[in-house]
Each structure stands twice: as structure tokens, then as C-alpha cells.
Image (cartoon, rainbow, N blue to C red; front, side, top):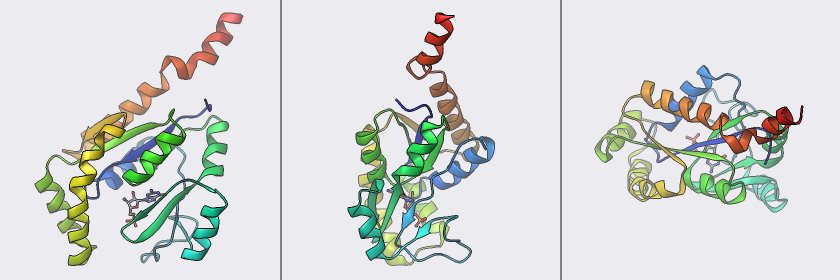
Length: 201
Ligand code: 5GP
């Protein structure tokens, strides 16, 4: 088991995971982020190496072939991946790493690194999920319909996760995620080395 805690936040598109993620990192600034690699084009204001590493499909393919990703997934026709080396280096140093990725990626991480803590952000209802996706206004009608269509299938994936948080409102969902992280930090197995060291003296 690595020394730090790896917390993965996921959930269907429109569940509000991005908002909850930002609110948790604001309240727990000690959490380290992972910068993902993506083949999608940067949106206005997004900076390479800050929001994402923006790469071509070819460059992405080379990284994948070299086994550089902890997980990789195709999300709405673009590729996204978490570089493995920086995440494991932070965990090795005892730092807690927290990131927000899609459901396929979260599943791969759980399989590869079962000690991770995975949290599923659930929308309060399917109707609200649809309203949120429409209200966001960042998608054209076609990609909106794709997202709405895949959301139902995504909701059914909740069983692959350790925790579920219903995002009825951002404040309580954020508090729940913080509580989960704090409880996991107190887990006996995660603290065994420290306990044994104390008992030795
Ligand atoms: P966006 O393009 O809007 O920034 O992100 C689209 C989706 O990709 C979101 O659901 C986000 O959680 C997911 N995503 C971002 N980075 C990664 C990653 O490294 N791996 C995976 N599997 N999904 C990611």
C-alpha cells in the first residue's frame, strides 16, 4: 500500500462532479491534483499543463503504447488519460491525490489499484440531470442528446464504487466527500505502520 490516499471522484455527466470537485479542493488545499492528458481542443482560457496536457491523437497513442497511463478512456469522441508516474510519485511521498474522471477510467483505477477510494456523485433525479445538462449550455443539441443517452447507462455503474454521494445541493455533497476523505484517513489498515511503530517504542 502506498503512503498517500488516492481519491477518485466520478459520476455521470451532469451530476455536478466538477462543481463538487472544485469545492472540495478549495476546502482541502492539501490535496494534490493530477493533470490529465486529452486529445480534445482547449476551450477559451484553458492552458496546456495547467488544465490539461493537450496532445494530438498520435502523441496520445504513443503515450498509451508506452504504458504511461494509469487509466485511459474515450469520452465523447476524445481521449483522456491520467499519467501514472506523477500520481504514484505523490502517493509514495505520502501525499493524498484527488481527481475527477469519467466512470470508465474510475473502474480501471479500481482494478489496477484497489486501495483507491472511489466516490460516485449521483444526481438527485434523472430529470434534474437532464435539466443540468441543458442548462449548462456548453453543448450543441447533438452532443447533448449523446450525453443524456449515455447518462442512464452510467447511473447503473454505481456498484463499482466504494461510496455514493447524492448531489441534492453542492454544499452538502461537498461536505459528504470531505467526510469520506477524513474517515478514510483514519482507516485502521492505512494507519497500521504508524500504530506498529508506536507499539515498538
Ligand atoms: P471535459 O472535456 O469537459 O473537461 O471533460 C469531459 C469528461 O472527461 C468529464 O467527465 C471528466 O470527468 C472526464 N475526464 C477528465 N480527465 C479525465 C481523465 O484523465 N480520465 C478519464 N477517464 N476521464 C477524464
